Image (cartoon, rainbow, N blue to C red; front, side, top):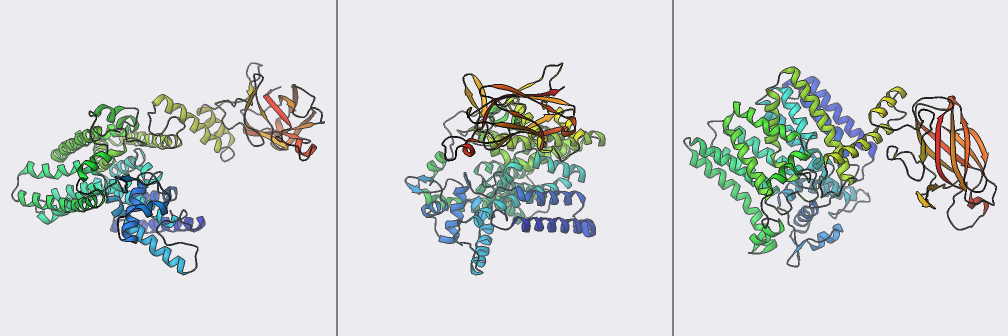
Length: 616
């Protein structure tokens, strides 16, 4: 965001603190009068705190929206070849012409942020800053991704406000936070904001909230229904698949057949169609008269039987498999039906239609998707279902449900990191629960390791034990041997600085030292007088070499190294050890480059096979 665009990090931090202070002040002084009570203040404060985690680069499908908005606003055309070139991106083409396969809604909603970035860049350049107001710099790219995040926050505010009309404040905020952190929404607001999904949630929420509020007003005029239709058109311009939601108000009006239904329905349809003409004009400009077949082709529509069960349950981005909270949301529609039968029934119809449409797309798994991303437009309806499910619970049970949502949120956030790093599988492939659990256990251990030294030793030891961490101390008199050349999976943090990569030589797995010293991060559970044994050999057997053994920067022993593989023992007094991670080092009296200046090869004094550390 601002920092990505070149603003000093400290300036951004000060701005965050100022925003938090302002929200807190308004909540304390004028909260109830202005609708900014404690739950909403919490929501806004979280939004401010997380704003710094937004990824500020444009990639993936977002490139196609970016070149459209730049070309339209700065070049005044839709000739996109120079825009792709200026961005340094691969050209998306159809019939040999540079084009964009995305509908124009994302570009339209990015336009205000892009223009603001352009004005800021012009002003900064005029004041002498090293900024180029060309529409390509990081200022513009971070502006549009920040806009996606802002639209997502606005959607959450709208959702919380709508839920309050039907349920209590506690239920409304809990359901809102649930659909934010325990679904893919958080990922597409922060980790991948260049995609259309964060903006599509905003557009779909505007549409759904407008429909629910207009339908609740018996005196609503055709003009009000036209606004709903226009918002539905905008929603469709952002994500074409979300057009199925346009059927909800239509069926709602036909269901009641109240006086004036025809005029309201006509106003709704005309407004939606008017927005659709914008997209038709762009398609005609980009693809010509044969745009229908081209649009179907580039959107991978048809040519495959519907994969309904896969869309819902597959380990390859299935809706319920990747986001278990959605199960509660869907079941919650039954509870909502007891309060408002018609909109709840229409929601079920809309959900089934959306699933069928997306199951009929050739890449039903959504390519490189975190979860079933193409159904994120249903977020406001999922939130209503979740709130209804929470609303039927008693106070004590609701507290347990809230704790369960927190667990699901933490599980989802961990899943995001594992998915994005592709440590388990490529991002377009399946991830099973068993493989995910192993990766999450490893990620949890890494998180606990990072806490070492920042929490009390006793607390850290308990957390490390709970996360499945391994200790080096042997049991029943048999010291645990740590193979330095094959880092134990339970200790991915073990090898510190001063080592070359692991190797295998003559059936022995080893690491060669690098430079004047090599260090390990060794987890010790209990402090006691101990003995370390290291098996190593010198890399220059004809050069005299001494090795000093250090523990937490304290030398505890020294040995002269003989040619060939040998075991070297060092006594470790209890006083130098600590509960948790200990820096264990080998410091060398010389290195090959010190002993033979200008000699080629690696600067390795020794090769190390294994080490043991155990109480005496």
